[in-house]
Length: 202
Image (cartoon, rainbow, N blue to C red; front, side):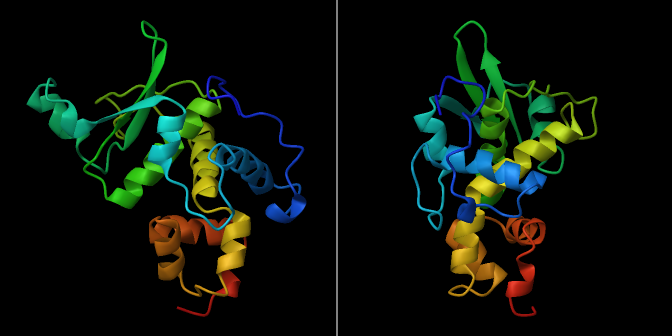
């Protein structure tokens, strides 16, 4: 994948044993995610560091806590993690990319947010706008957000790695710790991949 490209390259060379159920959108999301993981590259069971990936792609990261120039009445609402988590911006004058992160989030949620914003950029999604007029703190397109989140989650917790590690780490907590993600994201991956039944009852 060319870091300057807005979309991942063709996925025809991916081995089928690395993929979930063929013919589903989850399989297509997995293909995109594996192309992203190949940039580093990583084995299926290895956790991906989104900050390393952003550096490789030459995406600048700016944390909300660093935005001292914003007036307090604007900065404080944006710090509400329930409203806003991150945004990716292309800077027309510089030709570079800036990812803005709300670092009041937990470290693991911050990793997922950054991965989602990287996916927005690589997939060429139209940028959302930060606005206090929307309940979420930003403009929102549901299908775009679903695609970026699903591919980002698959990049952080790939199907092949998850399937490989379940016998060794047979709990949501252990698997989440291994991939350095939240338990909620790990549950999401187990559910959409139909792997949850391989774990013992909670």
